[in-house]
Image (cartoon, rainbow, N blue to C red; front, side, top):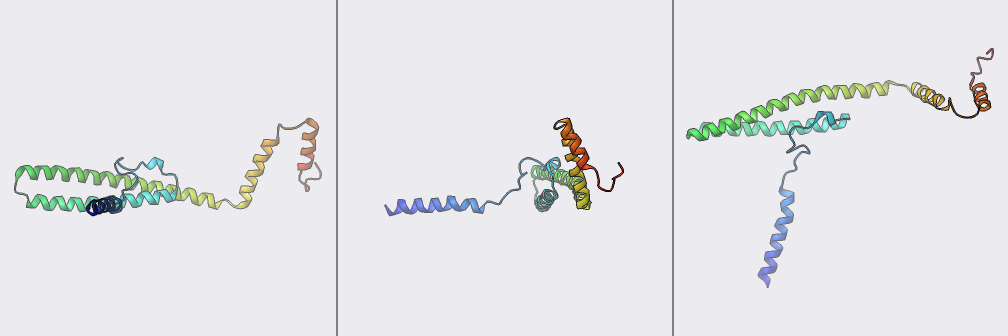
Length: 161
């Protein structure tokens, strides 16, 4: 009885703690490179950049390990296999470099767009809203109502019109 309870307790503890011991993978892991077209905000761009940097560090360490193993390996088949894996890792690293450059351009563009939005003063935004409102009101109401609206919307300093 005690042994079965102990076995069940230990196995359940191992199963529950195994989830914590597994490293968290980036969202795009297993899907290839992150899709830069999906990045819409500057914050998302920074997040993807961090994930790319992490993956690049992993690739660097894996490449170093493969090079060391290739030097130590005496078997010709193992060397060829390690060389092939090394080539694949280097290709992936080059692809990451390209996506990093594209991300850098996208990040600059997003930052410029953010700056342009901030440059618009409150007055300009208010004018845009007013123009939209006037366009919405154009075809609404009766003729008499439209005439009254036009009279009321005249600027007070344009009294000669």
